[in-house]
Length: 303
Image (cartoon, rainbow, N blue to C red; front, side, top):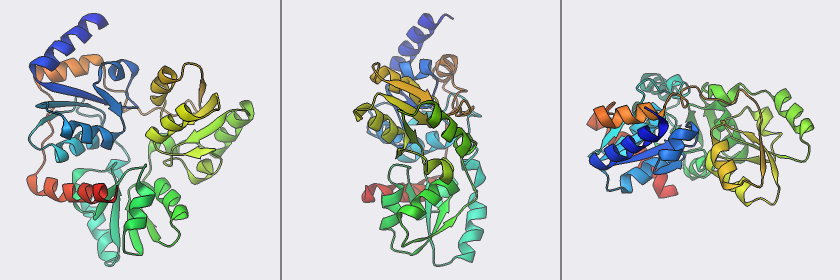
């Protein structure tokens, strides 16, 4: 089908299925265009929970669709591409986390939202890149096992020195591949541009930034700033919204390596097939879902 016909059929199926389509900021432009909401993973899950829709089509990766299911157990949550996963989320398992908890019996576990439902169920509280510092600061325990992102964990440790952060050896393969030399070169190339980076980047890259924040905060900062030129140090998908919302400003991607292959798997055809065939439905063990929800609820209480 041509794009125009495909979009038309998606809209028809969306109405028929009483569905809502949400897309992460890293999705391809065409998918962002047809979404009812575009944003970061947890904001999308909260939006889905408040929606009256019966069906959620989550254009993202597996842990994101799981988070939506955790908060909306009575709704059908569809992930258009079954193998759209998150390598960082896969770097920690519930079994491995239980072993580390045994070695640090007095420590609290803070899990980044980029983790499976099983890992969330083993954690005391969840966090996002936007609220991670506040969440860690709120935990009464001094020792904190932070999973799975060592780069975000290092960023938090510098912001909350009173805590002893026990880092997990996980990382985002997209953000982590960027080296400080690349950041220095592009800053030299565009000396009047501000460098905005995600805290999933290496500490030495973060140290070079003019602003550090989540995807949402990077978009907000660039939109509100008086500056007109920016170097973007997060996944290239954000450029779509940045350019759309700020046509008078100029954006440069810090590195051509800032592409998440898993986020780019979802196409309009996959959204159509998901609605047409009602696939692929996310199902969770109820005990795991309830325990995982507690970690998310505690985070919301802090927020």
